[in-house]
Image 1: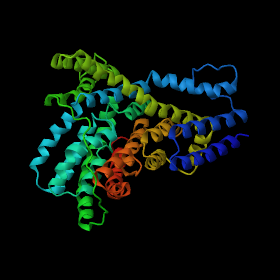
Image 2 (image 1 turned 90 degrees about the horizontal axis):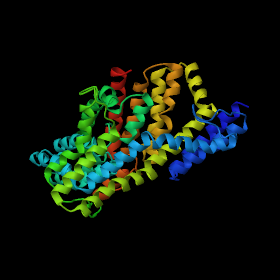
Image 3 (image 1 turned 30 degrees about the vertical axis):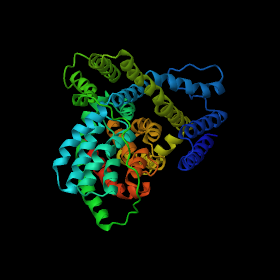
Image 4 (image 1 turned 120 degrees about the vertical axis):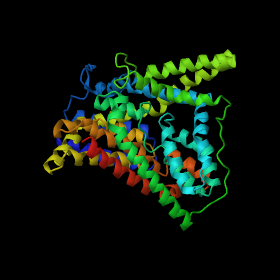
Length: 456
């Protein structure tokens, strides 16, 4: 009977993958697949399905559904809440014009460069710098299309090249404010800021530089080839361009600064978590806005964007993490994960090879669905099972998996950032992906190898 749940889990996983490719709602596909696997697993006599410490309802069939509640409660008091607050803060920064002020400030030096493709490479690096604090891939892309895009096309970079480079500026989604960063840090049992500095930063820097060089050559090659199909289209309008002082550009960096100052890298006697840092900054900016505008009704209305965006983040990202965790739990309970690990171990697969397998799974699903959150949330916790049986450094295993969830997004024709860039350039999303896949693949190889050398 023990083989039946494993076979069922494998078949349903394949079916779920097919449905995701066909663009069925990701949340419901993962949740439905997980519940079906769990019900069949229970029917085969396996009863240990709840996480450690969770109390049974007294009826195993109810426990399957209660698992959703248990996972939701954990998310809403942990990583899920951090994701919601981070999203709310990002929305507020956009609402008051601070995000746009930051992009304009960074874009100003670009006007001094005359070499089109050197400017393109520098803009790509600056885009990643901005991405540390503007954590929405689609949001960052829209802002850069308004500010960087006209500058790049004015000096001779084609619309397709500019759009392709901008679509890749969110490909290394690493930093204390990212939702997936919180999930990765929790998986390895580390503070998000410490995890970023000690494991990700040293891999991200050479990767971004190599990808900038790749964009220089790849985009120049395609511009000379000149076989993209261009159509006239209206440029993306900046719907969030609110007038504000240029020094508002500093606000998005304040939580990052606070997290670094009050950590093992600064004042270690004071412990400041991500939520507190974001809330502290939000409240401080509200006070500044009250002093500047002297309009309580307007300032409070803007401040409400924080809560509205948090609600939207729950319905989108946090709910997806919950559904993905139910699916991942079903794979673990059914025995499929242990079977895969045992087979890999018997076949001579070591920690490095298994890290590559898990990372490849995240990358493939991210490319197919255009979203790395569900892919990473589904497989991140499985790294614990691999590490428990094969040993190795858990943080080093999770690091490339985490980056794959954002890097491969920029070569997906259904990703929001790619679609936005394609609309701005007047070309198809596939034309954007044709220009992004090589820089991104080379960048991933650099990241993976660097991680092996530095962290493993």
